[in-house]
Image (cartoon, rainbow over the protein chains, first blue to last red):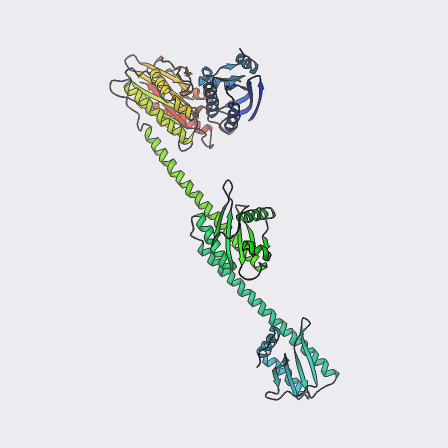
Length: 112
Length: 514
């Protein structure tokens, strides 16, 4: 799994690529931890190129989202592809996360 | 006979006495050709004279016995001379010299053989002495002690630096030398992978008490992460035999250290295994052992953990005066933390179901979420859960679903469909979003509440079993009893992932109206 992140203003956008599962979750978690070291973390996890997620991956995202919100920030998700979108819907995580069609829109929403 | 001074002369005397008959034959030949006496000498001492008991008169000829250019003695003949006789005498002196040289070589070889045997015995003793040590400190200390004995040194030390651990030092009899010197020498042998011999000058010796040091690298699991230090040889400097001995000890020490590490690891493994077995037993005891008899329902459940302790659970609660309640849940993650949270979730669920005045599935899930939210947050986990209740009076099935899937409802002779969750899993949001939902549950209707271990089972091509296949199988199995549906599901998924190790827990409850 590849993880690349860049900042747009105060928002950190993290692009994930590949399978997001129990094997790659620690690596993503490490990058999320780094991004969470600021006072009010605003994160967009762009999942355009993520082809698979398992429950460990979901737990990783939920944990980071909860910590962001504790610090008055948020973790938002963009660009869910069909099979991954379905998993978010089945587990109703689409009701826990704010999900946007594109990273740009997710960043924009932070700035409003 | 006076004491001979040089070892070569003593050697010649030994040869003469050992090969007496050969020398007699040689003398007889001279006497037969007209000589009056034949004698052999070393350092002016007579070693032998023929004819016996005669007085060796002044020689008419003599020839030196030379070994490696050094004269070690001579043979003398009286009463005979001439160039031909002199030539014979010279060649005989040569023969005697060769005999003496060979004798010396044999002695040397014998001495070396004895040394080697002594060393073998010493190593055997070392092996025996260090066989039963189960503590690394004790083992290294004993090895150091034996090293001082075998190497005839005043002290010895072992250095051991295992991956991820601090460097440890064991000295015998006491810390002899500066740790900084040992450490820097250790770094050197790690780089060169060869032994290091240091001889110190007298002024250095006066300062540190160190005369000489031999440091031999030790391989443990293919890496040089240990070394043996021989400190202050009792006599002289460290020479080639000392290096050889140190190499033998180092190799033995390396294998003893590896052996002990392996022992310690397997002990650790065994301890973990005992804990895991215990956890699994506790967990299995938490799952209902039998399915309750409920009027109007045929029900069955099964669970198969992937690792020894899993995060899946199911439960039945039927107490007098309260509706029959059943639950299936899946804690994210595997292993011990997942199992602990599973046990906690189950307990809270049971308590709420039995104590709350109106324990509808929605109320139970909300209570569980409120109660466990902080714990879930603490360990970065969550749990999906489905809770159902059967009301026999109106044959209604009341349920609430916190992010759990797959839940499949297959009406009698109808098409199977997913009952999707309306709320997120427990522990995701501070307040649960799950609401009570209701479906009619008539005769022949089947409800399958499984965990994602079924839908996410893969085949050899890494393809998921998926919801579609699961629904098809359930439609086919729906005519059978709840027990047969459960068994059929396990069997089908087994066949699908033929031989592959089970990646996730698989748990299922099947409820059928009758």
